[in-house]
Image 1 (tube, rainbow, N blue to C red):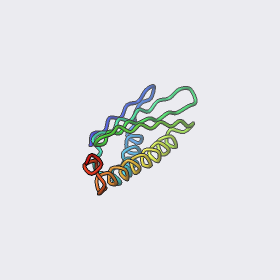
Image 2 (image 1 turned 90 degrees about the vertical axis):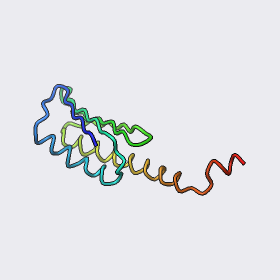
Image 3 (image 1 turned 60 degrees about the vertical axis):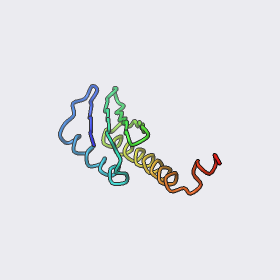
Length: 107
C-alpha cells in the first residue's frame, strides 16, 4: 500500500503522520486489496479539512471531513472511509460468490 500525505497551508509533523498511519491501519485491516491512499490535510482560517482518495481493486473511494480540530477531522475521515470500504467489500464478495451470475441470465 502506498500512502501519499500532503499538507496545504500546513506542515505535516511526525505526530500528525503517526496519527494518520495508526488510524489508516483500521481501513487496511478490513480490506487487504488497498492499492494506494492519498490524504490531503488543509487549513482554511478556523476550519481544518481532511480528504482522502483510496484506490482499491475496481474502485476509487473518496471521503472528506471538516472540523475545528485536525485530529477530530482525521478520525471522522477514517470512520467514513472505513464504512465505505466495508460496503465495497460486502458488494465485492456478494458479486463474487453469487451463484446467479451473468452467464445464466444470458442463456
